[in-house]
Length: 607
Ligand code: SF4
Image 1: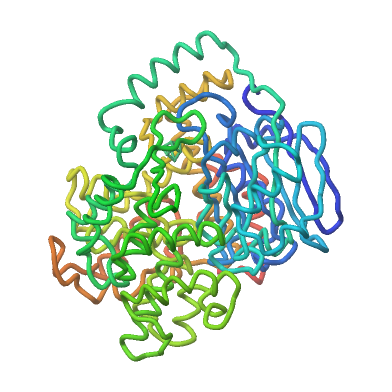
Image 2 (image 1 turned 135 degrees about the horizontal axis):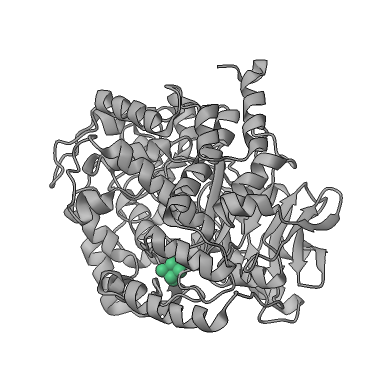
């Protein structure tokens, strides 16, 4: 099929083996190239109950159908694994140019398993893959790692995925970095790389990607970019990146502040204005993206891309840090150490609240910038207090108390959208395949940004969440960035232009359901049921104290009803288990269904 390479690369680090095999073409037609293909290979290859940090776990790297083409907003790379933070299946994406570079090496997927004896890196070119010693990179930050690898390989154009000390030290929210500032942040897949003694993957291109009819491909793309990408609705990304999301959350009174104690931030407006008006020096884009949402700033000699909205608020207002220079310094440090900003912002805010409430003294209170700046190093190197903070909010709350205000779902810390101000987001966090994630179903757009539907109700939210999850599942599998809200007719047209297939939006809707169910199959086999699809108690019991959403909590009874409705819409049981009939209806492949049925009927998994 055009636009696929037909080949995958397998690396077994325990055995030191490297092999190529043909891509399972029947899976490409069902699960497409990024998230879906990653899910399918992971379900095939590993037992979902394994320890995520064991050699048996895999890291599946998939550049997607559009990777390496000039289709707009197609510069994301998916990385999938079993998450050490949650124990669920977990895919995340990373921008820049790495997806294109991997595709140009000639692979639809790179799958790494095992554990090397010493720290290593992979060097992948179209002609050869090598497992090389990375001892000289031990303990190095991601920035230095990338620069040293380019020097070592005598190639400035080589593209790199790497982990920092956090990944090497198996921090549960360690991320993967590329091109200095781009991260696959969530779920701790950086720690999975660390558990394999895999410091980095360096790739160098060489092969072309073809499409069936180049002249018509180019003229259609010109039209599509004009009509659908560079339009007034998307202009804010070019001028401000993701900062306006903070403005919208502030207006709705749902911007997490002081560990989600309130939804009004006294500092956000000032911080983002300072960033934009004084320190922004330019915009940065992923390959083939005309929207360029990356904000490039310079502040007191620090050059940096970001912090984007999530990072700015979770490591700023949520910890009551109001000094921009400290926030920028903190974010530059966590990027280099390889730590996820959303999770670390939650972890620090949680221990600040624990200290202030007198439950356990972690030696840091809200607004304490001096100690806040010391924590990234301590966490990444697991020094002192950092050793336990490296385990995340769920662990800390189980050991020291404060479970009710441990802002996490399934072990993944909650992003910068308080669901008490847009109730659909609560259901979206609870049912997301990788724990508290805003990218599976972003309901604040219709609830509070566009004001299209009532935010303070669960009525209609089960359908909304399911539809958005399915839409994003197929969009992220084909390989289009979050920020282009194209409809499925257009997405089908792009796939057809690239592969010569004849898809329509109906098939893509079904594919979204299929892929989302594949994730649920994995998670059920890993032991997840309804009781894990739950939110922290604070969201049910503590009303927001001020602002437009003052007095709002999520009513637990109504949340439970919405969850049941969501399961019914998905054809899942009251326990959240997909039925065989449903899986056959959406054409999940036979082997996957048989595997699931076998698990369900075994003693271990009987329900
Ligand atoms: S909108 Fe931003 S994240 Fe998305 S492809 Fe463009 S630059 Fe990358």
